[in-house]
Structures are given as C-alpha cells and as structure tokens.
Length: 294
Image 1 (cartoon, rainbow, N blue to C red):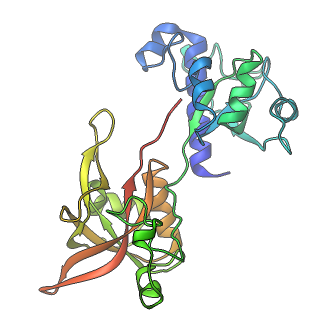
Image 2 (cartoon, rainbow, N blue to C red):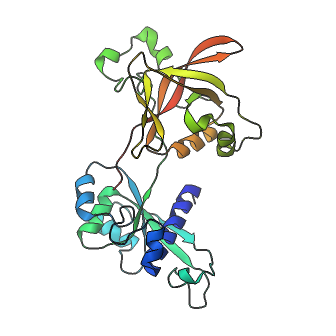
Image 3 (cartoon, rainbow, N blue to C red):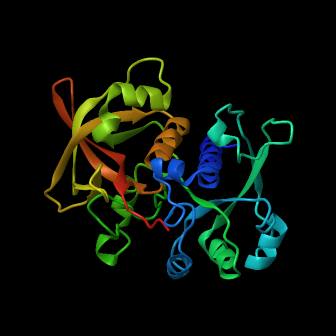
C-alpha cells in the first residue's frame, strides 16, 4: 500500500475516533462535528464544485455506508473502486477505547477504505448517505509537452500561437524532456535547506546546492499566508533560490509528493553561479497552481 495513502487512512481512523468519542476532544484537535470541512463536507457546496473539481477522497467503508459494489452502481462506474485496508494500532488510552473498530477481545482490527472522485462523492451524498471523507492528496503534476515549451515559468499558456516554435528551435526549447534525468531543478524556501532535502530524498551525503535565480516568476503567499509560493510573473521579475541536480525519477517522485497537487512541474531558465562563473541552463521548478478543497 502506498505510504502516503496509508498515512491518510490512519489520519481518517484517528479523526473518526475523535468525533465518535468526545466532542471536547474533537474540538481540541480542531475537528468540529457541526462544521468539519475535511470530513463532513456540505452537500450543496460539493454539488457546486463537483463538476470542475478533479480531487480524490478517501471514503471509510462500513456499517451504514455503501459497499464498493454499491458505489459502482450509485455512480455508474465501470468497475467498483479499489478497497484499501489500514490496521489500527492498539491504544491503552481510555478516551479512544469507546470507538476504534476493535473486536470484542479488545484487539485492533482492520479499517477499510476506497478512493472516490468528486463526481462519485457527490452521487453518494445526493442519495442521503453521510460517510466520512478525507481529501486524498496527489503528487505535483508533471506534463511537459514534446511539441511546445508548455508549461514554462512566466508563460501562462505556452500553447498559444504567439509562443509556437519553428523547427529550428523546437528541439532545444522543449528541454528538459518529460523523462530526462538527471535534470536541474530550481528550489526556494525550505527545499534549499540541506537537512530538509537530505531527509526527503534519503541522501547519504549533504546535497550540493548552487545559488541561483529564475526569471519570469514571483513569490506570493498561499491562502492563510503560511508559505511563499512561486507563480507566473513578468518577464523581468526574478526569484532567488538555489539549484540542485535531481538524479533520478525516484528523487523527483519524492519531490512531487512533497509539493503535492497544489503545484505543477514547469520548465524555466535557471541562472546559477558555479566556480565563479554564471551559467544559464534549461531546468525545472515547482509552480503554485492553487486548488479547491471541498
């Protein structure tokens, strides 16, 4: 089972237990029975978003909610959704023992889940079921065109006619390619911290960074103002950070998981200093694209 999916399942198990045991405990953890956007989304809000939102959700199966086969019928799916299993750990805390899928002898049992998209989720809500949902986060998208320079930092839509490439420039400007490794990435913020990248990529040695900048982008605050995020900017705008050589798809996948679906991989021109000389190379970075969370 995917470690990220298992972690999400375990989080859902914990949150469901909090909701079922004691409202005060739930509120202490920031979970409200009456206003729980992540677990109990408002039906009308989800109905409005479902047609455009491509999100996926973990849905806990069990008593009082449709089975995987019933979900297939309700949503008109070609096949039942895949069922996942997460074993709950034993916990001696009395507050948790009133509800956490334990058998009669007190041993932990297995909770079951499936993943549904927004359309399926909305179909389930429309017929009166109120199962527990939690947003299942995907990796940052990476869809580099082989026929244009799309997507490119500073060019919101590089597929438009004015950005089309002639045959002489096509091969050069469509680099890096989708499956090209190693590949240089531009980082900013926490990914420029050696300890963070070492843990994330499970490196045996500290990462090698070079001071770098990219043009055509700017930093903005994510909703809530907690993080800086790279977005399209004017052609003369620059962002300071660092460059790092991503060695393999495995390293890149770890980075994409870290950034989540709120970002996408885009091409960019990276200016960096190495051994006292400035160089400009075609590389990649993570562009903030935002998203809806119902």
